[in-house]
Length: 546
Ligand code: GLC
Ligand code: CA
Image 1 (cartoon, protein in one colour):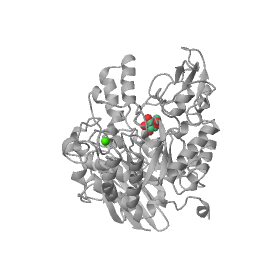
Image 2: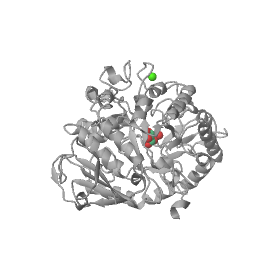
Image 3: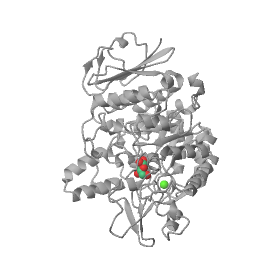
Image 4: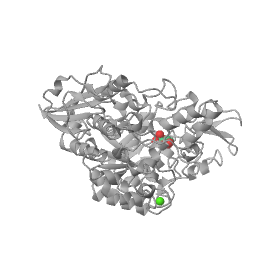
């Protein structure tokens, strides 16, 4: 009964797998070194072959590209660098023919300072657009408070014309929008409905937990009116169509996730939260302050989200996105066991409950890079470098942080083949190609069943074939084991068993569930090996009727 009442119980996105494209790094069709929409269209067959259901497209709207498109100056047009509105319509249609939906990235916390709203807003306090942004009176040189922006520097910028400061949680070119203003909210809803009219399949909501800021109280995440705004947004837009919506929420706890993804459909389909992926940093410090991954804690975090959100909300499953380093370099092994560890991480994640996200190149086991400083492009990395140099950090120490955590690790061009520039572009790419493209590329993997690509393709198929992937209850096994990540998923008729060796040593495993595990669905090695011995990064997934 309970299940029947749940508004989104049989939603398509519960068995879907979503693929994220970072357009500037995916495929360049016109030889300017920057990926574009026609480039994506030319690769739809590749994605159809992989088997994904939807593409989350990082922002393609018109933008000065201060933060690679996360600074939008026209929400209803495509940036010429990526193509035209007609190209976008073609992409939606061509993807649709392959049963792939397009999910747009909505950046609603802030706009570009070059957006006409902001251009008007800064003219005078009486301007009708002034209140679309967050302003505080003050005197030049005397900041309203000591809040800092995420990309370094103060969160306040002085505008002499109005003798006020505007608030920006990200770069100075990303002024925060004022959600307290109902006119601004209305404009946003109209814009979203316009895109829904164009046939998009859903939306990813950028830093959505930051829209309800209260700078006077130094509140950025989870402001008091956040869920009120989300419910209004959902009612005025998303609920009118069969869409998937996912909220990026760095500050989401389990309790908050239940609000965001309440099955009554009052807010969003699912939450995209980061608790598991922030574990390898020093407590209370920044992501650059590296610490080894606490493996038992990782297991505890996954278990908590898997068991406590079950039936009460919906989560995203991910290791990567355009802001995170490559998982195979981060928590796998990008050397001798690259293939095995990339598959292990895939199997570990894809057996769980939630909607899996694959970030471009993850399905090939693409790795991090170690570039010279002048080869980095990301505003966050460039600012961090300067800031830490000024604070007296040693060069090697800063570079170690950048190698491990720079967002550019994820933004190097997609490795299509072993030809020039990895087949990404015919010109000089906007960011250097990872030199390992001759070995790691799509052409070398798509035909091979035992490639990382082959493993991802299989996992995607399995999710569609076996309902237990979607509904099964999660139970963690061997909780205290320092090397093994093992769990079952169980529904009324069947059981999935996933057993993974997270490290590079061979280990004996004693687990009664292995005695009668059933059919081996997928393994990170070509051959099944011995049941009670796990080779380095060996992962196995079994299924049986119960
Ligand atoms: C999100 C995006 C990130 C961007 C930031 C500001 O975290 O994923 O790439 O820089 O928001 O829009
Ligand atoms: Ca191009």
